[in-house]
Structures are given as structure tokens and as C-alpha cells.
Length: 411
Image (cartoon, rainbow, N blue to C red):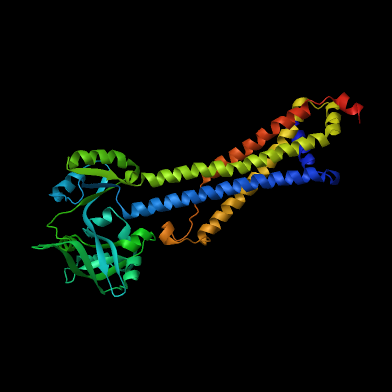
């Protein structure tokens, strides 16, 4: 019953009369301030989550969880079939595939452009990478055809820039060509475009191309050698442990690395950006808390006589204190609820309809992804309500310390 009385009085005080219009305006500003802070924080965290998860998904879709490569640049991995058999026995490894890659020039009817040519095992590569599941045209199986010229699958950006279409022929120029008396002659090979993929990740779509392992070895003048073995795990977060085991199997001439090490700087940047975002936008909540403090102080000054009457009628000091605490908490809860609804609603529509477009060449993504999390809403709401509560302590204590006789004497 006591709690109902305190909530009833707190709600009545929040609905100010005309002569207390200033208090009502400050209260409204406090609610808007809390709502704005909560909404901004939800949206900012959603953008951070969206970028981090989208980039992580694209990176892991294009690359393996663990890579075994030569320690010295330019070296190759010999006897790789036996090594793959050993690496496949490492716990949590569910796929292993060889590959060879090198920087080359792609020459088409419109333009010549630098890129990376990957030679892959057509049967094993889908076990470790999802890149070639994003086919826009053509088919991965056509890389198995042993025709002349051999097949190649281009990224959509690379195909566009060089002017290549499905079934057209492209010229690939490799610096690793044939050795002649006057030096190394660039290797020139012709490939037939049997597919075009589009991952949505600018760096991959604009520069990568895939062909069969045998065709790449011929183009790069390699004799049954590879320069990378890719491993896929049943749990990507076990990559550090798998990397240690892979290093033991690979031996001293090779080194093992994983997706976490390769992208450590990127993920650290996202983590730091998240912290900075929470601090800077959290200042909005502090401003809203100051508004709540001012609103309640003005309310206490306006309600001196009412407080004295309540206390003279038997209201305890603890009840008076709880009345003003509940006022501040009600402001915080109302603003938080409005902010959560507005924040999650805006995130949903902004992500679904891709309201904010980006330049792929700069940001690697074509739009700003929004990915709000339930747990973020929980802790943001808890912090907002806690700050609102803390802002009520001083005015609530001031109200409970009033002496009814002293107040009524001067009324």
C-alpha cells in the first residue's frame, strides 16, 4: 500500500499544473534527453556490430580458419599431399585444401588490371572456403573441364573492369614465366571465363580470380607445388589451439597462422571504436541525468508546502524520499522505453531498406549494416535507469530533510 501511495504522488507531481509549466518543460526535456541517449547508443552499437560481423563473415567466407604457408616468401610447399593427410588428423579440423596464388595481370578488351590468381582443388576448396558459393554466372564445376584454354572464374568487379563476359577469353600475364638466356620472360596464358562470382566484399570481387590447381601451376611455372594449405575447423574460435598443432605438424620450414592473427588490427580497431562510442554517446545520458536533477530540485522547491502537509499528516521521511526517487526513475524508465523502441525500430528499417549507402572502394561494403543485439538493449537500459536513479539522490534527501513546522510557519 505504501508503494502505491508513493507512486501515486510521484505521478501526480510529474503532471505539473499551468503555474508549474517550467517544471513540466524541464521534465519533458529530461525524458527526451534519456530517450535520445538510449536511442543513439543503440544505433551506434548496432552499426559497430554490423560492420564487425559483416566484415568477419566476409573474411571467413573468403579465407580459411588456419593457413600453413612457407616462412620465406617465394618458397613452395613440397610433398603437400602427405602434409594435408597429417593436418587433417588435427582435432577439430573438418577440411583441408591446397592452393597456389600469385599476383598477375588480367588483360581484357577494355582494360588491363592487376589481381590475384588462385589455383584451387575444385573438390576440396568448397570444404574450406565459401567464396565460390556466391556465383553470379557460370559454375564452379566447369573448372574441371580439361579443355584448352583452361577455365577461370573472375570476381564481378574484375570482370567488369576488364570487359569480360561469360565464355569470353582473357589473357593472364604472370611475372613468373619461363627462364631464358636473357632472363625470366613473363608467362602469358589464355583462360576462358567459366564463371563470375560476387561476394559483396570489394577487395575480393575486384581483384580475385580462381582456376584449377593444375592450370595455375602451369601459368605460374610451378611443378606440382603449392604455396598454401588451408584448414577449416568445426569451431572458428579454436583457431589459436589448432594453429599450435598445425605448426608442430608443418615443421620448421613452414609457419601456421590463423584468421584471428591475420585480422588482429582490424578487430582491435572495432573494439576500440566500440569503447569510444559508448563513452562519447554516454555523455548524452549524463546530460539527461543533470536535467533530471534540475527538474527534481525545482520540483522540491515548488512542493515545499505539499511536502510539509504530507509529513504533518503522517508521511514518513523515507516515503517522501521514495516519492522523489520514483519521480526520477519514472522519467528514466519512460525515456529509456522510448529510446529503445525508437532505436530498434530505426535499426530494423535502416538495415532492411539499406538507407545509408557507402562507396565500396572505400568501405569494402555497399551499405551501412545495422545489427542491434538484445543484450546491448538490456545493459543500455540498465545503465540509463541507474544514472536516472543516481540523479535523484540529492533532491530526494533534500525533500526528506524538510521540517514541516518551519515550512508552514512562513506559508
